[in-house]
Image 1 (tube, rainbow, N blue to C red):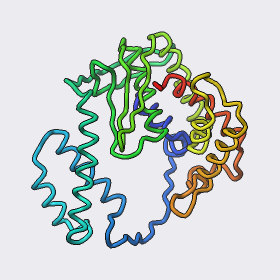
Image 2: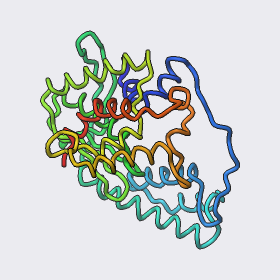
Image 3: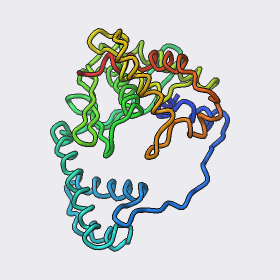
Length: 286
């Protein structure tokens, strides 16, 4: 098995099932997006951020890059476009400063390991003396944490002893404690077997469930909170994620999820989330 496929599955099991098992790709009809005169659409914003980030990470001069972006016409006109670029540069500088604290002589390792009857191959990059280092220009979500967790398991199986971390927007940092190789091995075996089952029958691992579990999990005692107030707030978060609001689409609008779920089964979604996210929160550095 290629390790990239395992990560891709766990980041979105339902979409993976449709794309890779059924060979079905669903797309919503494109809408005419009306952009505010002083803002920029999401796709252009993403592209510009990554262009600037790559240049700044390599410590390259970005004056010419800024000129090209301004001439491309994707920015708001005049002063507002320049202001947006300056704000973006400031945000990226903050992120790069955080990254620079840990990024020293990164290494890459290609691996081919056996986990019981399964052969897993792939590679890990950005291996530091302190552990794996990852970063994201936006807010870190449960998919980013899942991806890092699986890579961290491989890192520990290969003998790594550091604390893998991901750095995100506004100095967000998530990191995992170092694990003994045999503990990481057993965890990874569970996720591989979950992957094998999930490519045959869709696994209802959802953002709604992850948001619920993040609120209801007691990290100190490694259990579900007994406080009914906390439980109510957690279920409210689940429902809000599922339904959405005027600014953010709810998970129920996802075309892939719509093919699987016609009615929200809260109990089932919570049970699945608890099973697969408990190891992540249990081993996440407080």
